[in-house]
Length: 119
Picture (cartoon, rainbow, N blue to C red):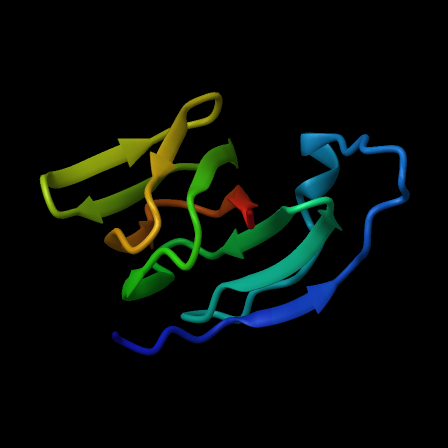
């Protein structure tokens, strides 16, 4: 598995189960070439992480540690998947199965919401 590097901070959920996707923008500040991540919610077998990318930032090929739903909040990204590339834009959702190899490249400043299903 290739190593991917990003800044990560944690914000535990409020217990109410409510998070607003637009509030994910700016949760953490990426460095050029290095996306950042902030945990927004981590409760009851679900973890939501906000990833912030500058244009051109990449996460090199790695395996999904859990089943995941990827949603673009702003910007756009290219996902390299075994069956070929997929470009995601705001409002689109991509499902990744556990263990699926993928890579990510931001086409512009981008915020992703990644929901990991931990059970």
